[in-house]
Length: 337
Image (cartoon, rainbow, N blue to C red):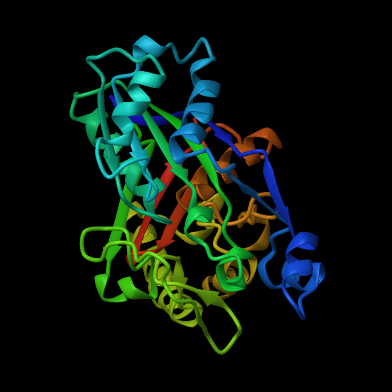
């Protein structure tokens, strides 16, 4: 038995933050300039009472509405999030209850960002190919907007909220459908993309003082901080070698991979990586204009959009590459079912 992706759905919250609105709030910026710098036109933002679990439920319900995915068939729920409902209990346990899944279903959270979907596929593959599960519901859900200062254009122009639900199932196949994988970690870069307070190391600071950087971005220690130049340097340093390592492990050349789906960080970074790796434009996916950087959900959202557009065919070999906060990176070869 092999693990294989069977279906993907996603959900975007109703609130939309467009470039025209951002331009009104940010002196010296225009909607066109934001689009040019990021490749993003809209970001979907959660309402005040919405949490990542609410987005996760809506994405999962779309999958569970299919006759191919009955609730009673789900053996395990994997939730990737860095914005859980609570420090405890585990949000995946709450999802098991809200989705009315059987109580013999396993459920766990794992805390990863932009590499999380690929890591999640690996966890699902392990559960399935060791006989511990036949159907795994892999959910990625994030509400980074909750961490963002309204006057920090370095991150507010980029990140959007979303959730994606992916059904990974056991199938009979002589060929590997999900994998091989390549992983990497460098925790020395942790402080370059961080929410400094909120965990046990440093509690939230009431009425924290605002600081302003040389670019005019304002934030407090309770907000998301991103060192853009360092994140860019990390990406250029780590992503090309992980692509090479994946090809070597899969025993394939670049030309034998039908499609490359990278984490959708921003258009500038994606264009730079594509050119540096020498990947053809028609085999390289850019799909973030309508929703922005949705962290762990960017890759499944792109895959679902490609499917909706009729651009995926059975048996396509796809290279999935995630990279970002941690620092953490991962890559996998996947065959479309």
